[in-house]
Structure formats: structure tokens, C-alpha cells
Image (tube, rainbow, N blue to C red):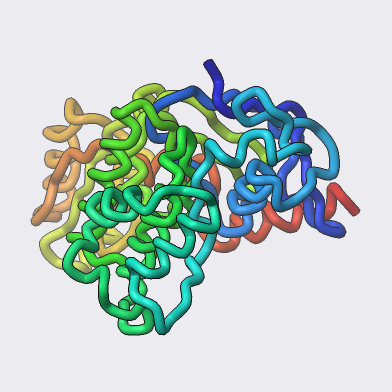
Length: 315
């Protein structure tokens, strides 16, 4: 079963097409990562699914119900969009109790969600004393109050320290394994890779990829990082490897050679042939970040050109 289905879903803001002819089916249960460069329409898509923004054209359903009638499904959805808003002078517990009452929920859920997000023991402190990370945890707790089948989180690890990020990652995975569907938007690609079963990549409103994480990671390749012992030799090394037929890119004092482990000895010999001693020769497997950058653009210039192109098409 597909929990979310879109067909030609489009949203324009003036000359900007935030979401462009998006047709996708997102599976039920598990953690779904939503990734893309800044300004690619992730938040707009989330708002359309929640009924907060109307599409310019196209259709979408959540649990089989049209997004034009969000009242039919919002009781089954929990969401954290941007920064959570709470009454600063009230405690975390009081804020959650108030939200539970507004939604017609029992207060017993408050204890459950506080434990889930790791705020037990801090729940009686006023929210105004909370760090950004603690407010994020409280926001996730609020989203979990209705015990939702679908949980939508926009940048849930924003402001968390490394330990907090690990805890939230574990929470997301446990929710997905328990049969919930969790859609999480994040710019931390390592967290998407670690937490998600399924991933959706959009670039300036266009769908670039949608499928299981394993399928996307199957696109990874090996490359070899080499570094000359003396930085002054890097230019000579780059020229020698390029002349020998390898595709080489420079960055961070090392050279990245597009080849696999079988070429390691040949690379070492090519460097020695021009009198260069290597201080580094490491075989590296591409990460989700490498795939993402290859799909969406590796520099601000590439991204700016892509955005300009989409504006030009609308104009």
C-alpha cells in the first residue's frame, strides 16, 4: 500500500516553480528520506501534503484521501514543520498537556512521548530555558501525541548535538520498524543514509530519484584518493595521472582518481615514474553525499544555474 500518492503535483509561486509535475508513490511503513538542495521544494511538498498550501495543479492523496480535504486524514498524521512553537513560560509537560487537550487526546500520551524523545527529568522546566535541540525534541514529542500512522518531520535534528542526533536517528528507525511511516526532510545526508529505508531526491521541484535506499546506494562507485608527500608535487602528479588516462579531480590537498582498487598499484607506479612519493593512497567507496552531489550539482554555481534555468522555463 502507498501512504502518499501524487500525480502531476505542481506548485508555483510567481515565476518560481517550487514543485514541478511530481508523480510518486511512497510506501507504507518505514522511514522515508526527502532530500534536495536548499530551495528545491521539500518544505512546499510537505505543506501541500498537510493541506497548508494548495497545489497549482495536479493531485495527491494521503491514506487514499485527497489533500484538498485534509480533515479526512489529519487525525492520522503528526508533523513538525520548521521550528516548533510553544508557550515559553510553561513547562514542557504543561505545553504537551495543553496540546493533547486541544486535540481531544488523553494526558497518558504525554508521558509516553516525553520518554520517547528523552525529555523525562526535564519535563517540568519552562520551555524558555530549553536549548534549540531540546525544543526540537519537544516538537517531535508534540507530533507524536496523536500516535500517528504518518509522521512528517522537517529537519528534525536541527540544533541537536551528536548524541542527540544519534538518539533521534534511533527513534525514527524504531517508529518505522513499528509500522509507522516517517517522512523526514534533512540536509544531513549521513543521517538520511543511516536512518532511512527509502529516499526521494528532488532538485528545484523535479523528481530526480524515488526508491529504496539500497537501490540508490547500488549506484555508488569506488575511487582512489592520492596525495603527494610534498604539496609542491601535486601539480606534477596531476599532470602525470591525467596523461596516463585517468580522470582526476583536485580538492583539499588530495587528488581524486575515478577508478577502483585494482588500479592502486598502477597509480603508485605512475607517481614514482615522475619522481613523486605518495603519502596517501586510499580506496574510498562513494557515500550518499557523493551520489546526491552528482545528481543535484557539486557547486553553488551549478545550483544557481539550475535554479535560473527553472525560472527561465516558467518565464
